[in-house]
Length: 98
Image (cartoon, rainbow, N blue to C red):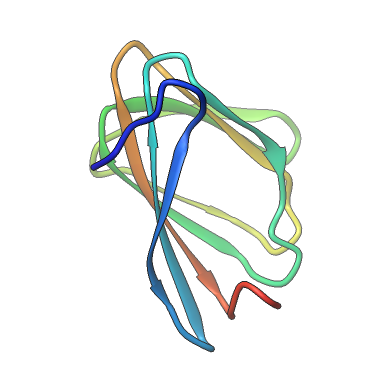
């Protein structure tokens, strides 16, 4: 798993016309600003570490390895790594062009 000092790292693991699987890796304290996936729900599985995942009406949850969270299509969400490295996978429907 690759980590970058400058910003969170994202690596596409699978991309076909139906599905995208992306692995994200964040160093302690790094964050991914609020954004949304306009054409698909987002399923997140935490693989390593802990982080705060925020979505919807500022609903924040601290989640660790083995936890899962779903954000609905178009729902804004963000993440911040805790005091340790954070690695999670995001599964989305559709290709990057959708």
